[in-house]
Length: 243
Image (cartoon, rainbow, N blue to C red; front, side, top):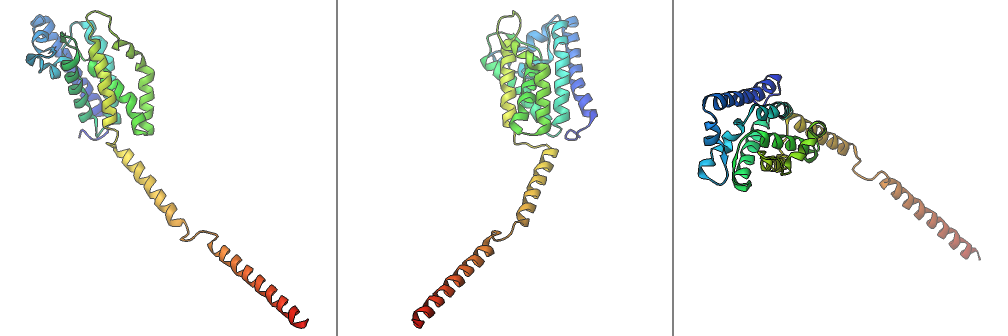
C-alpha cells in the first residue's frame, strides 16, 4: 500500500516516474524533434499551456538537462516516500501541481519544461517540514537536505540563459507553503509519540495529591498556634486571679 513504509515504494515510485521522463525524452528528442516539448510544455498564461502544469516536468531539452535533474529527483522523492509514507502521494501531487500553477501564472512569457521546479519544491518541503512539525525524524531529514542541497538556492537567481529560474523560485516557495500546510498531518510514529506523551502526562497528574502536600501541615500549625495562645491566655487569667 502507498501509506506503508517500505523500500518497495521508495524504489518503485521515484524510479517509475524517472523512467517516464527518460522514455518521453527519448521519444521527443529522437522521434519528434522536440514537438512534444513544443505542444506539451508549460506556456505561461495561455489556455493551451494548461496541460503543461502536469506534463512539463516530464519534458527536457537535452541529455544534460535530464541528467542534471535525475539524481536530485530520485533522491528527494525517495526521502519523501520513505519518511512520509502516509502523506507523500498528496504532498507530491500538491507540489507538482502547485508549482506548475504558480509558474503558469507568474513566470515570464516562455515555454517552461523540466523537473527542476518539482525538485526545488521537494527540497524546500523536506528542508522546512521538520522545523514546522517539530518532529525529530523530520528535523534530521531537514538537516540532511540542507547539507546536501542547500547550494541549489543559487538557482533561484535570474541570469543563466535558457534556465527557468522562475520554476526554481516558485518551486521553493511552493515547498515551504506545503511544509507549513501539512504540518498538522501526522505520520504514524508522530501519532504514537503524541499518544505516549499524553498518557505520561495523565499518569503524572494521577500521581499528584488531591490537596497540596502542606495542606494538613498548615492546619496542624494553626491548631498548635491556637493551643499555644489558649494556654497563654489561661495562665494570664490565673495570675490575674491570684493577685
